[in-house]
Amino acid sequence: MKAAVIESVGRAVVTEVPDPTPGPRDVVVEVAACGICGTDLHILQGEFAPKLPIVPGHEFAGRVVGIGSQVTEVAVGDQVAVDPSLYCYECRFCRDGHNNMCERWAAIGVTTAGGAAQYAVAPVANCVKLPEHVRPQDAALIEPLSCAVRGYDILNSRLGAHVLIYGSGTMGLMMLELAKRTGAASVDMVDINPARLETAKLLGVSGSAANADELDRPQGWEIVIDATGNAAAIQDGLGRVAKAGTYLQFGVADYATRVTIDPYRIYNQEITITGSMAVLHSYERAAELFAGGVLNPDVFISDRIALENYPQALEQFAAGVGRKIVVTP
Image 1 (cartoon, rainbow, N blue to C red):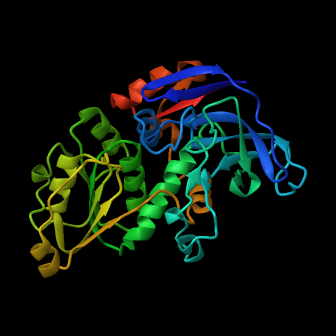
Image 2: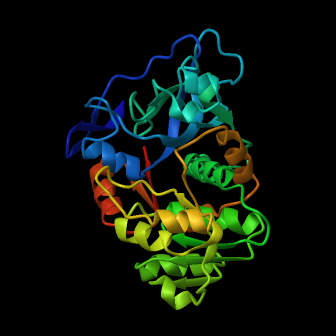
């Protein structure tokens, strides 16, 4: 079969690889679409993946074309979205309910072959059946949505909060949609990319600007979310949190990124600084939200690129052109 392969640091190719073979409790999925995200760039740069080469792609959905001998939960022909998370269920974090902190954390498309291919194999436990009205070529959005749902679990936000989001890429826009549906009084967005801010306006953002000073909320925001991973944005966002407010680090920063905090202000104003790591007990809820229309795929997916052009799709994503980019086998 044809698959994208990150062969070495900085080098991605499309080549022929062996067809996947399911184990007794595995499913083979004919991939309809696979999303590209920042994790794929980190893998290309030599981070995250424990070893190369690897078939990337942890955001994918498609139809079941093969099942293992012990699989009864799905059948050939079912359409599914795949939760890429692979946990040991034995370490202290898994046993404590924090599986995303698993000491043996692994993921489809990161530590094992993923969905940037014609076919992918996954444990049946990771496959979520989708209703027939959901287009599998759109359902690659469910995995990033599940990360956003996890972010809102961390926030424990209350009704009527004023929210500020840095970054109007795919993840920032998903956080916008969830904020609107969790009773925010207003949702403002900061981005230096005017084209992306136009999409935020289309989705009903309360205010948008290249700089938070333009948004005229001197008292700050009860919830501030960084969806960029950019040091300058993070530093600015930390200073915009209102008294008794919460700052969420949602964007994936480079390992070397550093910012400065003001410990006295955190103490004196009771500011909470927290983070959200990937997926935790949120994939099925994201699938249900997606099936219910929480996102408009035609707005969120800006580019559908053929699998053979995977290296070019990575370059486009790295350049910040478009919104969600998916590759289609």
